[in-house]
Length: 181
Image (cartoon, rainbow, N blue to C red; front, side, top):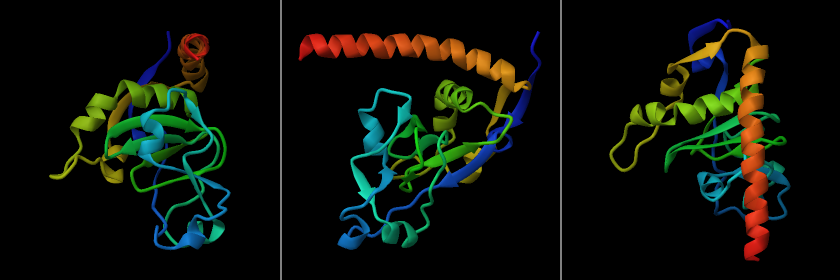
């Protein structure tokens, strides 16, 4: 039987916040080639892996603020407005300040981390604070305790089973969308 351990999310990877280049500066967005994701992009997104959002930013826009390029397989987690949209970076990209993304460490399967955050969404959301809208800070997210299999191979087996189910759901949605069109 697999050994499960309690650990903090910070033990599974590096938590990174995003930022927004000034929208008053056209040169930060015009002809941009860097994928930039906002919670709005995930509001209608139904897959697990995201490649790009509605807008891109330029290299100058990237350097103008504290957003940073996140590597492929980073798990994006919206931390406000609303809390709990989740996707995995299919390629290098960056996010706005509405995210606390997690770059999995070498002992954490990215797809398992995706499902772990999805499973713990309500718990994470309940730890949000704020008056206008709830937000989960990076520090709060880092310190949330979760249970995970110690062995990455067990994580991969679990995510493989869940992934196969989601593959089937996504295939059925494509078929249904073609029937509607």
